[in-house]
Amino acid sequence: MSDAVKVGFVPLSTAPRGVLVVFCDDTLKFGSPTRKALGEAAGTVKRAAAANQFKGKNGSILDIPAPEGIKIQRLIVVGAGKGSGLKETDFLKFGGVIAGRLNGASEQVTVLADLPDDAMTAEQAVSVASGLRLRVYKFTRYKTKKKDGEDATLRAEVSIAVGDVNAARKAWAPEAQIVDGVIIARELVNEPPNILYPEEFARRASQLKKLGVDVEVLDVKAMTKLGMGALLGVAQGSARPGRTVIMRWNGGKRGGQPVAFVGKGVCFDTGGISIKGAASMEDMKGDMGGAACVVGLMHALAARKAKVNAVGAIGLVENMPDGNAQRPGDIVTSMSGQTIEIINTDAEGRLVLADVLWYVAKKFKPQFMVDLATLTGAIMVALGTEHAGMFSNNDELAERISKAGQETGEKVWRMPLGPEYDKQIDSQFADMKNTGGRNGGSITAAQFLQRFVDGTPWAHLDIAGTAMGAPKTDINHSWGSGYGVRLLERLVAEHYEAKK
Image 1: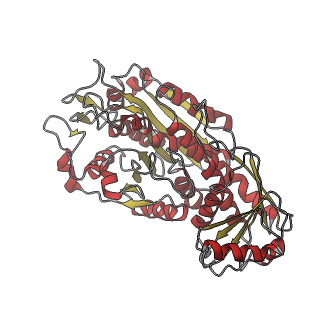
Image 2: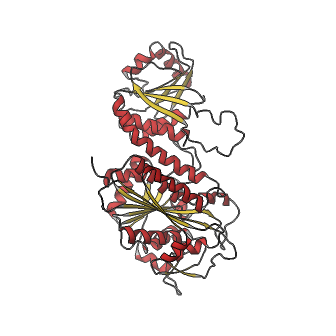
Image 3: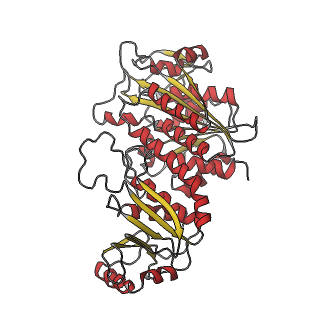
C-alpha cells in the first residue's frame, strides 16, 4: 500500500519549512509556540483575516501564500472555533481540511500542534495525522492520463510538531495501522467487478496471513458439504464460483471466547432474475462493502497486535442472471436447516449472511457477532447517508456500538426489531420468505437475519448509505468510504481487548 502522505512527529521548537500550518480560536488568538514561530508574520495574519473575513470558525481555513515576516512558502491558519470542548472528530476534521489545501507533489509541511490555550495532546495530534492520511487517499489506479493536480500530494511530507514527541509516536504506531485498514476497505470497494470477483477477493483477504491471521477459504465443495444452500443459491447464477473466507486473529487469551464480525460480500449484484434497472447498476460493484470492512478491520487488529481473539467471516458471491440462476419461487435450505422461499432474487445479501452467521455462531460460539451489509435501499430512505442503521438483540452491545460511533464519527442509529414484523416474512410454502415487501424493508431484512444468530448477542449494521457513494466529508473524498473499520476497532479496543 502506497502512502499518499508521509507523517512524522517533531518537537514544537522545530523550525518550519515549506508550508506552515497553525491553529487559532475564534478571537484569532494563537498559542505561545505559534506566536513565537510566526514572529512578525502575526501582523500579516491579522490583515489577511480582515481582508478574507476569516473569523476562526471551527474547521475554517485562511491560506496565505508567501507571507511577509517569515521564511516559508505558505501559511495555513486553521480555525479551532472556541477552542474548548473539542472532540476527537474535530481533530480528524482539522487533518482533513489541512490535507484539502495541500497541492504540491513534493511539499514540505510543518503543522504546529498548538492550540491557543495549550499544546495538543499526543492523541489529538495523532487524530490530525489520521485525518490527513484519510483525506488524501485517492483511487486512481486505472487512470492512464491524469489531469493537472490530480495526484498532487502523493509525495508530501508532513511533520507534526508536538509537545511530547515520544508519546505521539507511540500513539501513532497503532493508529497508522487502523488508517491502513480503512484504506484497504476503500480499495476493495473501489475496485471494478471484473477485477475483484469472489476468488480474487478471497486471495486478497488471504494476504492477512502475513500479519499472523489464520485464513481459511471455503470453496463450493466445502460449502456444499456444510449445507450452505442459501449462499450457494445466490452464487449459482454466476460463472464465478462463490467463496466463504474465515479469518482468525488470536491475540487474546489462548482458548478465549472470540468476538466475531461477518460481512456481506456480493462482488457484483445485478439483482439476478429479478434484475435491477440499468440506471446506476455500476454502483453494485460496491455491494461488498461489509466484507471490505471486515477485511480492513482484521488488518487493523492484527497489525496493531490487538489483545483479543477475533473472527472475521465474509461470504463472497456474484448475483448474476444466467440460465442456472435461482428463480422467484425456488425454495432453498440454509445451513441451519431452515427453509427459505425466494420471492425476489434481489434480496440476496440476507441469504449470504444467513449461512455465514450460522456457521460462525455454531463453530466459534463468539461473545457477540456484528454483521455489516449494504443490505437495503430502505435504510437510506429512513436515515439518508449520515447514519448506518443498527439492529440488535442485545442492549449492551448496541449501546457500546452507538458510543463508538459518536467517538469516531461513524454514526449509527438504532432501529426496531420485534416479533410483530415476523408475519411479513412468514411463507405458506417454507419456514420463511426472503423479503417482506416494501413497508419496513430494512427491519424485515434484519428480522430475517436474526433467525440465524442462534441466540448469540448480535448487531446488524445496514451500511447501504454509508459504505459507498456517500457525500464527501472532511476526511473522505473516495467513492468507497471504508465505513465501519474505525467504528468496530474502537468497540473492540474499549470493551473487549485485554488491558495491558
